[in-house]
Image (cartoon, rainbow, N blue to C red; front, top):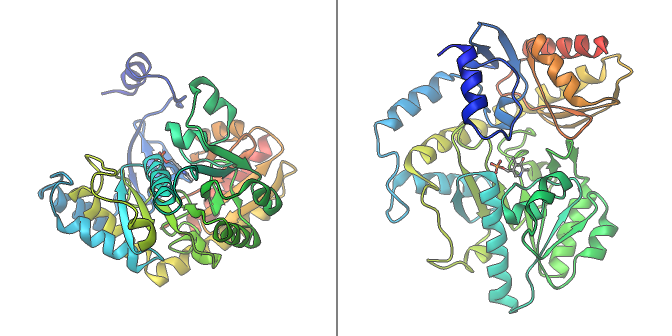
Amino acid sequence: MDKKQTIHWEHDYVVQVYRRPDFVLERGRGCTLYDSDGNAYLDMVAGIAVNALGYADPQLVALMREAATGLVHVSNLYHTAPHAKLAKLLTETSFADRVHYANSGAEANESAFKFARKYARTHFGEGKTDIVAFSGAFHGRLFGTLAATPREAYQAPFRPLMPGVRLATFNDINSAAETIDDQVAAVIVEPVQGEGGIHPAKVEFLQGLRDLCNRHQALLIFDEIQCGVGRTGYLWAHQGYGVTPDILTAAKPLAGGLPIGAVLVTEAVAAAMAPGDHGSTFAGGVFVTTVAEAIVRRISEPAFLQSVREKGEHFAARLRAIASPHIQEVRGRGLMLGVKLDMPATEVVQAGYQHGLLIVSAGKQVVRFVPPLIINKDEIDEAVDRFATILAQF
Ligand SMILES: *Cc1c(COP(=O)(O)O)cnc(C)c1O
């Protein structure tokens, strides 16, 4: 199908909730994507922090081919080995004792909210049901998670949202202390905020939340859907902070591009859930968990994580060295970087298409870099050079 027809059909037959640029992506290799005209794009988006191993990774392709001849899906009514093996691996590489599967980030967070309410009800009776979230947070677009995603444009058309969500100010422990009380079942926070503009939490903030949750017997949920699975140079972002949650949610890169979500929990949280309390038709399917296990094994290698930290430092240093009056700040952790501009990020993102550079905004004035974790130094340098050239145009 040619490019014009794809774009027309897209326009005529798809619900228009995304504005897409006028090229059609066709194939990829490593950190590079190619459109139907053969133009190459250095990809700093990676499916929004999803394609951790880039495109056409030979090991991953071979594994998927083999897994496709297997069961693919059989229902959560039955035992399957990949489902169990991934859960064991995730607990061995984290604080968690047990894992629950979902199909996306928002679903993982909705599950976490249900777990928190069931835990609170089991141990403390009625009335302890509230969720505390923070300014700048993004936790998803379903009704519960949307209520915890305080962006007016996302929420306004869909009210009423799930009740019982309170808001406090990110990185402000006094605000958190004023908001968290004994009626709170859980506090949810991203150790590094993604969509909100790449804001790392301060260590004292996360530690303070841990203390407040302990004091008020609320569960601490780390949403590591974007910052988890190696993105910051630690398998789990909070491992770089030394603060441990009761529940962690993961999704985006966990199955190398296939849809998955996971909720990692302590035994105490898991013990509050009984058969019938929650479920999903697709979650934790054979094909997806087979792939996810391979991804987690690759990314959790100490040498792999070390390389992410080194490349992240190099990337941030190169971005900081750009002499542009448009750059106000470079921030982030590992290969999750944001450049705060004095101008709309979308203009720079648009210009990127002409320069063979895929970048994505995170809020109005922040350009985000979340490339495949397998990116090499030459590709980082090339991306920074192109970004500098683009900024110089404005
Ligand atoms: C993307 C994202 C979500 C939502 O994930 P979906 O798979 O799009 O539902 C939730 N939290 C964070 C931090 C995210 O980055």
